[in-house]
Length: 478
Image 1: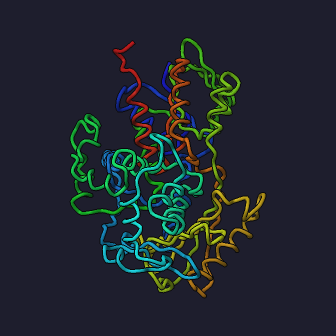
Image 2 (image 1 turned 30 degrees about the vertical axis):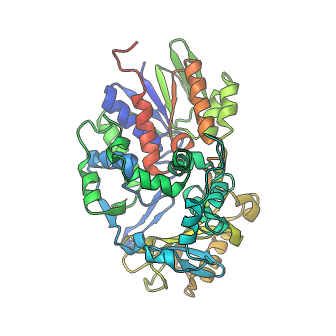
Image 3 (image 1 turned 180 degrees about the vertical axis):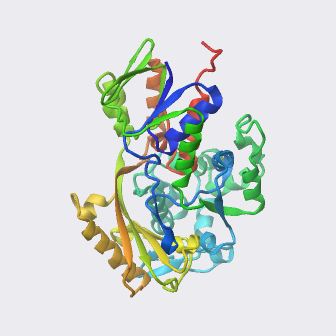
């Protein structure tokens, strides 16, 4: 019997990669759809020199998780496009608030001036944190909005943190857990009584500590050293981010890992010998299962045998997101260059933000924009099953209004992503601990990895898979 992985999104493919690297045993990855990559989807238009990204397009090379991804990319020998911190897409981040596009401060000087949409200099918010004691009970969780308002004031919560949460997980900062999504800030307050105090003390700690001995047995990845030396802010993959899961699938195939597409698991049961996966036309016995499925999909297949586990999995909510890619024939349409802009929820607009793809990467004289809509507010703005035309029209209308682009788009594409991003609501860390505790207490031959449990970013889901594989007993252990 073999190990099986459920799901061939980035986390599932990563689980396959790390299983192969650690055990070298036969394994199979089962994917319900006819393609790999999950929500990562690149639509190429090479003849016209541009790409549309239906999901993420850049990766940050920061910290342990960033180094881990660069190690993987190095192994795959995948061509990448670095974006240094001096690049306009790294320096310029914007908001659309109070009827105007506002450039967020990108230097210390920005802290001492009053810049829209804020009504006072940002250093005042930092002083507020310095002179505000900790009022939260030890180890208690709260929303990011509540935490930020308490530490830095309402304006920072409304116009800095809330739109940032829209950009990270299309969620409402009033609901998202600070203990999970901004664990460092939470821990700084817990340990030192303030965010800035904690950041100050952290500068004197050995940064190597966070690398966790043994993670990079062959030494720090060369690409990570290069990224640090050259001060990369982020990077993309040549020909689009979907090349990453495609390269992973190719690598796995070359090393005898079977990736079965259009193979949906309809039921998953456990017994003393392992597990049994029910597919459309087969019952497959396996020794161990690593699930990289969304939590709600795993709940559906384990519910018959383990309803309590299914109920815990269903406590992780998901949101729907609309992505609208837009192409214009001119590259002279944007008044401000940068990575893009976010829209604070207090503005009560149906869009979450706009990414300026053609500022990040060369798009051969085209302006390429990606509009993100919906998320936590999908039903409020769009109701049940909105048409693609309606969604496209809303995106076009708000791009015209916000960016003052009079030219009509030449081409656009609407992607409706159903239940694509998990929401890390208050108490999420404990929720995930309880799910993994249930699995351990019942001695289920099951591991769970991916965005639902360990973070929504590309680096997070890859590292999530690695850590779950490394927790499996070695062949010599009982």
